[in-house]
Length: 106
Image (tube, rainbow, N blue to C red; front, side, top):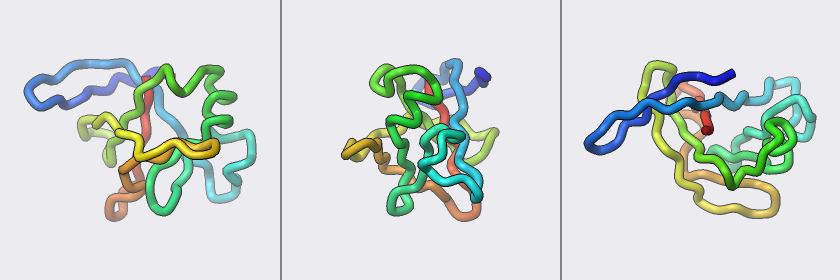
């Protein structure tokens, strides 16, 4: 499902179409095929590449990932900290206070 999001730049605001990644439920393990590969690695947002690519039938390198901590907040482009083994780990925390990160990609 495509979601209209907006990206806040330093001087401009632009509309982009994005897709929302779902966090696995507490009863679903990361290695169960029913999730998008989203997980927390040492409290940082991480995406398990094989699950993301299988779930969305795409190559992760073709996409940009975004984060927000509230549905009404502007989305922010995420910068990867590193790619190791089968994971992309980002500099952004999976929780900000009591708000869980909402992850999008285009």
